Amino acid sequence: MSGSTASHGYERLAPGAREVMEAMAAVFPDVGATVHDAAEARRILALTMPQPPHLPPVGEVSDRLVPGPEGAPEVPVRVYRPHEEGSAPGGTPTVVFLHGGGWVLGSLDSHDSTVRAMCRASGAVIVSVGYRLAPEARFPEPADDAYAALCWAAENIADLGGDPGALLVAGDSAGGNLAAACTLMARERGGPAIAHQLLIYPSTDPAADTESRRVNAEGYFLTETAMRWYGAQYFGSPGDLTHHHAAPLRADLSGLPPAHVVTAGCDPLCDEGRAYAAKLRECGVPVTEAHFPGMFHGFLGVGELLPDASEAMAGLGKVIASTASDRKIDGHGGGSEG
Image (tube, rainbow, N blue to C red; front, side, top):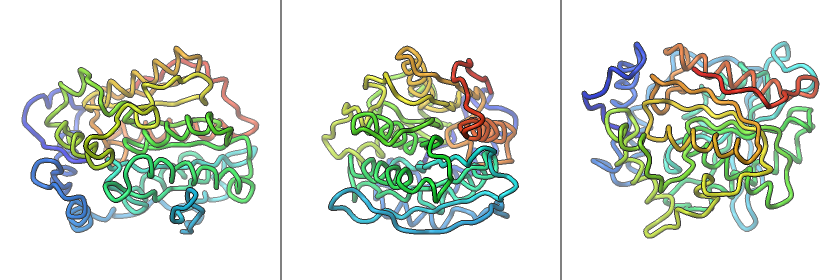
């Protein structure tokens, strides 16, 4: 997501993070400030986003279309299969992954390297979802696409991963919001059964007024200005930011699947991610956390450039692999601190 790199507060960033963050900001459209049209923001991103020097190799990658919500178009997905020797023992988990980008930006391609790394770290099949984007498709249509893809993965899990008890949903940023919404929809609609949810610096309450949104409003890649713009594209004006599928933090979270929540200390969304983990725990849901105080929003996408990104991905991989039939986690561990 977009952001400025104002000079204040850099001492809170981990070593090496400032340079990486500034490089990301330099190629990202400054939405909400100098760029106000979603199509233009996508054009800028397509022109400026560098191609990674090498893509993490996986066993197989295939694109396909799956049924969308009733009356809606099919949903493009990209299925990543691990190398056989890297597969999780006892049956391969299947992860439905929802990319970030403020519900406006991002694509199967933008998160290709990240999803490949997740596939390698976990030995799981990853189904990356190309849900419709705002403002062309506003709330709840992207969430409905995400849920439709989740249902397709559940119905085809034997062909995808082979372990019907190890279906997971994951997402970063706005994708974390959609992943959390999927768990609520699955609870309300009688399925599918989700073994685990992986929420990576998620947006859990777009109308939140938190300390991290104030302290990290400028200078850490994702800005408060950008977040307001993203919200206006997704929800419209005026939009209902309080619906529990839009703001999962406002929902009753009892009975949801176990969660692993990744947060970054220099991220405007930090507090609502941590609050979501706390509320899940209060509602009796097993939760682990990986908090990285010196990281910024979007850090997982830089891969091996930052040790914290590598550590976060390794942790995600362990959680995913542990859902395989012979390696069920007990879910009662405490938080891991990055």
